[in-house]
Each structure stands twice: as structure tokens, then as C-alpha cells.
Length: 187
Image (cartoon, rainbow, N blue to C red):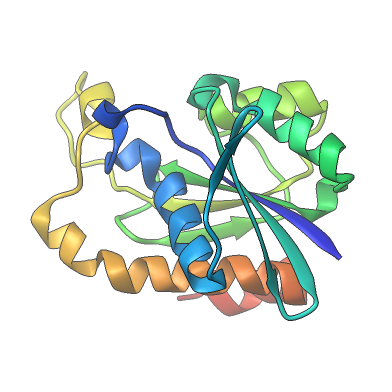
């Protein structure tokens, strides 16, 4: 079975390592685990690998966050992957740093990347794996916070958090969304 795992982020050096680009970092960690490299292709950087019986297409869209749906729709169509085998990895302000929340479907919760994906797919019925980035910023400073870098304390915890997100992403492909939610959402 073939799966599409999409790590959301923005292209460009100015966005590297920012909170908003955590989806790219998780995708990079999955590629490292699978021993594959990204290649620049249409609408993004793509890597293809295997985890046991699952064929995994990893995507880091080059469309910028707010137009992520273009890349997702294109690669779903090109690789003939149904919506129930799509996982989108995204940052989430509503969760404390490093918290993991997997859902099989749901709202965009104000996230423009998820909003665009739902708009272009015509459905909210795709799985999303949310990486908590916290919300420790003064009123009116949300954009600077999201586009800022993680604190040194958060970076120190990052290897362990990335490992957990890689485990959850691969479990989604091998076990399905319900089993993966039961295993990882409680942590």
C-alpha cells in the first residue's frame, strides 16, 4: 500500500528551523529513518521509501504554506493515493511544545496550510499529525512567534520529540489511524 506523508513548511533559508517549519523537520527525520533523500520535483521536494509493507511518498511542498493544497492534490493524483492514506504534519499553537495530536479528520483550526488543503481536496477527511509549538508570546506577536526559532531548551528536547513523531508517522502507515491515535495521543 502506498501512503503520502506531507510535512508542511515554507521554502527559503529565512524559514529554516522556524516553528512554522516543523513539518519539514519531521519529514526530514522520516527520510533519515527510511534512508532516503529528497529530490526537487514538481510542487516540492519528494522522497520515496519503504517501511515494511508500506510504500511511503514523503513531500515537502514548495508552494509556501498557504498554498500547500496544490502540492498535496498533485502528488495524490500522480501517485494514485486515496485521501485515507494521506498524513499531513503541521505545527499547532494550541498544543504545548512537543505535544503530539493525531486526528483522522477535522477542522483546519485556523491553520492556513490545512485550510488550503481542505479547499483543494474538497474534504477535511485526511489525517493530520499536529506538533505542539506552544503559544508563549505577547498579544499581537503571533506571526513573529510562529516564524521564530525554537528556544535552546526546546531544541535540546527536539531529537526525542522528532523520534516520536517519526514513530507515529510510520505507525499510521502500518497500523492505521485509530491504532496510532490510541498509542501516541495519550503520551
